[in-house]
Amino acid sequence: MEAEIAKVTQFHHAVHAPIGSEPALLATNSADARKLACQLRELLAETLSLVAGGDPLIARVRMSLEETAEWVEAHADGNLIAAADAWADRCYVLLGDAVASGLPASELFNAVHESNMTKAQVRGGDGKAAKAEAYKSPRIEAVLSHASSVS
Image (cartoon, rainbow, N blue to C red; front, side):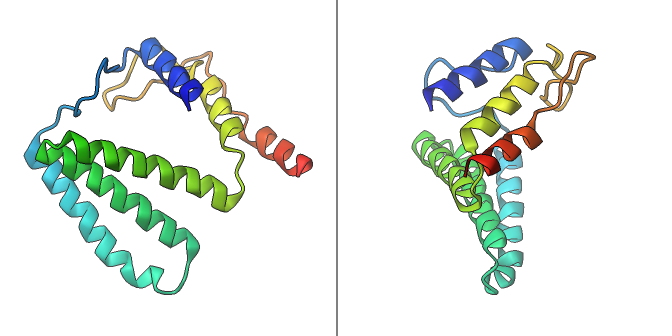
């Protein structure tokens, strides 16, 4: 995972996004974070009946939402240990999504990184890098096609 972290750090440098030098919580308005966490928990409650039918996609999305709610709650509570645990759980769920669906995670990550590095070096108001004239879409179809032909 160190190579992937290095690539994301490279991208953050390119778009002037924050890069932490030591473990810390992200800055947030606690009231807003609590409101968001509450909304995520409400969504989880609303989707409970959907997962009862055994739908694997809905089950995985619910896991992702639950871990995201825990990440937000940890920030609202000022709890770095809980935030770190929620971050690791979110990573585990995302990697589990790749395992469950047979996606070539490393290759897809690399394709998205290559694409992201063609974005403008300026971030928009939403914190995302803007697509520039030099932008190239990620080669997702080629990665999936190659993965299908190898297996």
